[in-house]
Length: 257
Image 1 (cartoon, rainbow, N blue to C red):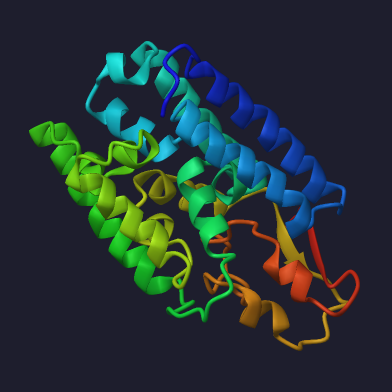
Image 2 (cartoon, helix red, strand yellow):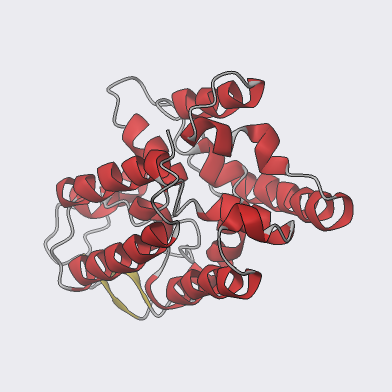
């Protein structure tokens, strides 16, 4: 379904504009999950129309040094990849929350009203993703293997239903109705780079003295990143914690911990 006449740069430009808009919504206290829905929809559509900004796959072809697949010179692609890591260091993982089509399609699928399962503790997914990241680097740099190609990320958004890998990622998307973002949390190599940056973000969600200790934010968080001592590396800024919080001003997005 990818429209070849639309340049990949459209996805990158959208990512920058959407990131700025979402950062403003969070910073001004206007972010809500309802206001995030249009971003999710547009991101998913761009995934199918342009196959961008699918950052994990763009990182994959960057590792493979495949400028033709990137549709851009390698230095430009590297700068684009690093740009959002720097932005995560300032504003957190907004790119994962509503902008990357791979994450957005899972977020939309998780809205399906079925019973949710899975461990919200972030330690196990992070450990698994770290191990896969090492395999990803070894396969890409050492063997020239497109690991995400086997997972079917490109085939899914290209609607290449003739390939087996299409159904691999389709299964991941279907599972995400029950388990929150399995690809993002357990596999995504770009997320493995963004998480350490986000854990040191200048702007982040923090508790204030208005917190009443009800722990509703912790129970609402699907990644287990809402505990008081959490560094928020696995916070996708989905807005579930602020939506669940009953105390006005107890959770704010701002500078500091």
